[in-house]
Image (tube, rainbow, N blue to C red; front, side, top):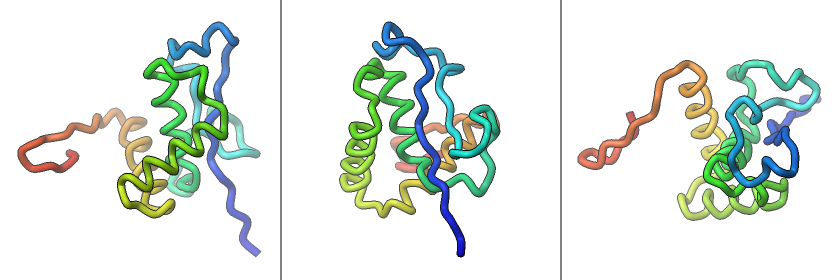
Length: 116
C-alpha cells in the first residue's frame, strides 16, 4: 500500500504578524513527518498549490485570512478559474517553488503569453 503525504502551508509567527507583513523566512513548505526546514524534492508535489497560494496570500497582506479552509477554498477557485485539475495545479506550483529555490525567477512575456 502506498500512502501519499500532502504538503502543507505553515504560518509561523505571532498574531501581530498575521497582517501579511511576514518575512519569507517565517513561511515554509513541508511534508508532515519531516523537518519543516527540509528542502523541496521531486516527490513533494501533492499540496504544493495550497502551500504556494497560502504563502502568496500572506505576502500580499492577507495573512490574517490564511487559515487552512480559506487557503483550500482559494486554491480551488483558482484551479477552477484556470480550468486545471488538482494534479496539474500542484505540478505547476511545485515547478514554481523549485525554480524559486534554485534562484531562477519566473518572468511573463505578454507578447508570447508564456512563462519563461
